[in-house]
Amino acid sequence: MHALIFATFLIQPTAFAPAHFSAQPQEISQDPAVDPKAEYEKRKKEAAGDVDKLWALYDWCGAYGMKAESRSALRAIIKLEEGNRKARELLGHIEYDGKWFDSQKKVDDFKQKQLEAEAKASGKVIHKGELVDPADLPFLQKGLIRDASGKWVDLESQKKLAEGWVRQDLTWIPPAEKENIGKGLWKCGDKWLSIAEADSYHSEVGSWWVIASERFVIYSTCPRKVTEQALDQCEVAYRDLMRIYGTVPSLAVPVVLLNSTDQYGLFARGEAGNTHPDPNGRSSAHGAFMAESYTDFLSAGQTLPGIAYWDSSSKDGSLWGPIFVRHAAGQSFGEALDPSPKAVAKLLKGEGANSYGEAFWAEKQIPQWFRYGAATYVSRYAANPRAAAGEDPYTNRAWSVSNITRVGGLDPLDRVFKFEIGPTNPDESSKLINESGLLLAFALDGKCVDVQTRLGALKEAIKNKKDIGTAGQALADELKKNESKLRTFAAL
Image (cartoon, rainbow, N blue to C red; front, top):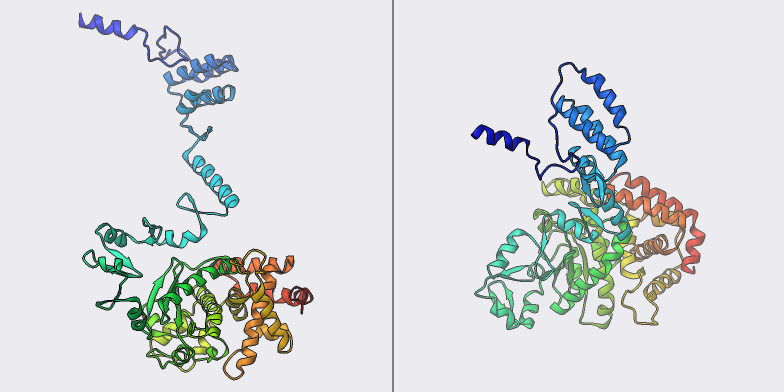
């Protein structure tokens, strides 16, 4: 009885049969008298151009274990019916975005090409299969994520936030103390102080304010209000620094800001409790300079900072402060992209102290005139993005060019490219710094195609860290060829 029921079940039509089978399928079994190859060729010829017959051929090939031939039948079906899902799926094809692909690799390649096209059109970059803002890339590469306020944090910071800790600048405040922040107090050491008391506490080198954005960290002895304005000025400079270099540092770059010319001078000479940061005396030429050595930073593995002062106690100091801090930000940015690891390593070992200043600059790949030009451009040649309606955004540029004219006009370009600055002739050094900014202004904004092409090549070299010196020399040579256009641009 059971055998009869089982046999009956086998021959009943099934509701789950694929659409290409007949209503009453017949069992296909191998006939020992048949030559499979010859029979296949015969059936293949008969099935040509007929989807139903090709399905029958596919089934027949399966019965004879002819895998390659059965796949050939499926491909023939697809030629006739490109979107035949059953045939596609039996071949292992994958549907994506309304298209069929014969492997996952081809799907992945298609997705990548789509992303690359979208990135090019939108100005974004690809990170782990997603489009992101280029400015976000360095943080994402470090594994950082944005917290609820939009700041970049690591996983440990996320844990503290979840536990109720809060940050005041870069200091973590435990839940039991955070009510002091609401009272307008500032954590200074182990005490909570008013803003006036905190400004006094932070007015000395080493006990300074340390405040940060995503891109900069400022160490400042200036009052809190001025320090926040300085950080904002660094951010103003950032976009133009991206334009100049074509890439960005992977970490936030440091800037040291001092509250007076006296403190600036003491710091530069190494008399403010720090290692001599200015062995070449470049601070004498400008209100900002690049710290060539600063062991407090170097020992902690930090990038060397640009140094500036902002004396908010006088009108002139308040006018020059933003210019100096933007220049320092430009120097810090350039140092982060083009450090001197060999010279620094020797210094930290106590070797080569007497020749360190020379070794520091000799190790650089980016030309000095270009690096100073970048810092000078963002400090006094770039357009003011906050100019009022109807106001000339290039007033600082016109003033800077007038200063070149006032002291004898533009120097021979070879002299600017040689860029010999130092304490022996601070006035001439100051002029060279100003002139380097003018050259960058022409390269960026002068609409000279040949010069802009060479600038683009240098940016690519800096980004790839390859052939930077060659690309820098090519840009200098092109600027010399177009000196007449440079002079027209600057109205010299």
